Image 1 (cartoon, rainbow, N blue to C red):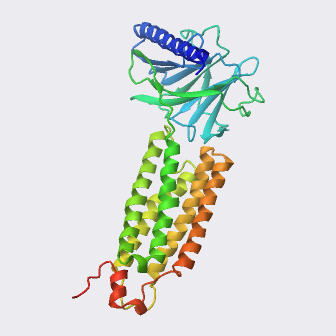
Image 2: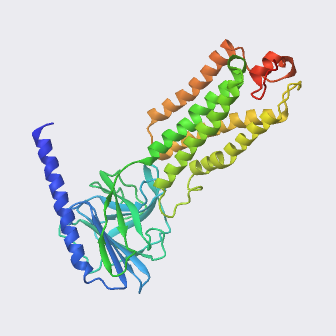
Length: 400
């Protein structure tokens, strides 16, 4: 690395350390005078005098409100939101219109511009005289929410995200105006649960669990089910009774484990107050697939195995339901992965690669399954010799 790069990094690190130290000292001084009816929590991304993002939350039990004051040296816009990620986050964005600050309440939608809320929950307020706003601040705004709000907890620490940009909105006078993408962002915590105290929030690791969620769900629904279906459809003769064991454990163990992991990762990034099952079409379809169709398909698979008989002369309806439900849920899962990529803000290239993968699965089914293995193998009476029983029925034990 160039020596000037290391020097700049050291300077930035030293400035952030001094900034955090200064905020801590100021907060500790304020703590001694914090009334027993209030709880104060502050966070700055650097020195409070030169920071591009600072926030103070004041909980007041007399007025039953929580006041948020945000200030920044940024000349464009600055805001914060609930949770650990943009998707599903309730956001409060502010900028100057030339005379006053404009506050805009928004709802996060992946990496797209957050949607404007025309019926905001907040009440604009004057910045308290007790908040020391530095001369370097270009944007300052304060608003209050009822202390029953889901934006911040009154029983523990709450996680937030912040962002800012040096470029302003296209129509500064309107709270519904479009605004450019952030130039910097991060995460932090605030805690207003302890009355009579003043605390300093901490920075949170900016790790995007949504990407890991997407990878887990891609494996769970775009890799493992096609493999399990291929085995069940084409490899009964080639694999003998091992086809059923492989099919069962891929669907029960593999899909189950990766789906559970994917749902757990959603919980890690779930913003406060967001409905986990209905926040988007992606969430609704994912809930249906994971908690309704998938368990039903597992039960149908066990039922089909238990009801299998070597003497049957046709494929029964419950087997066909199992087939078509499995195929349908794979198609639905592919559509939902596409919706998830859009929600995440994935580029066109990644989405194209995903659908190339889906097309490749159909090509493999045709070339390998239909051409090489001669098509689907079914359990019907004409295959019910002792030899085929041993290959097709996992419960069969040959008599010697």
